[in-house]
Amino acid sequence: MKKYIVLAYAIFLGTSVLAQEVRIGVRGGFGLANQRVERGLLLDTKSRFSWQIGGEANIAVDDMIAIHPALVLSSRGTRIKGSDFGVDYHIRYRPLYLHVPIPVVARMDIGGMDVFGGLGPYFSLGLGGQIVADGGVLGLGVNGDTSIDWGNDNSDNFRSLDAGLVFTAGVVWNGLQFALAYDLGLANIAPNGDDDNIVRNRVFTLTTTYFLPN
Image (cartoon, rainbow, N blue to C red; front, side):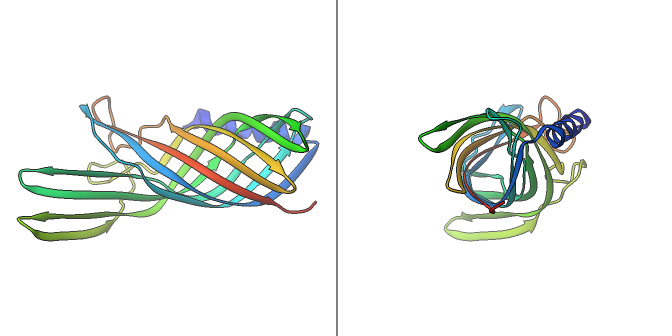
């Protein structure tokens, strides 16, 4: 995790010196979140609806390169659904993160639109969330929910720190940005995780950012 933080600091330090223009905006979006979960074998997880809201900067380094750092609240997680020994179950993991993507993008002007694409690191800190479970036994419904426990003990649900790569592409037109992004989690967020106990975040998002006038 330390090497990711050093990389992020280097990016911000470099862009603060080289930036030609900085624009600040309000960002929101939605998408599909999932997790790659391995417990010796790869589990069959399902995607769930996710959302995010916060702020974003567009830092122009030159006419072809920009940095798009953001600070957003982001819902993530996964769903596990199945049936074992006559018991149907549906478990929804709904963690909430403070999410900081820092993509470096190449950009060009096409027909008056700023078209961009690139990648960079992301960092996330778990803040809260819930686990919601329901199911049935012999036609009788069973349900409940509990708060997510963050930490690295066997009794916890997830490690609080996450990091990975974000891939993004989109357009900026008339003060509005429309972007697609995919977060590829590289950190193992399973408590006491090892090669036989792996959880990594995977999130696809569609976002819109309104940049405030300079």
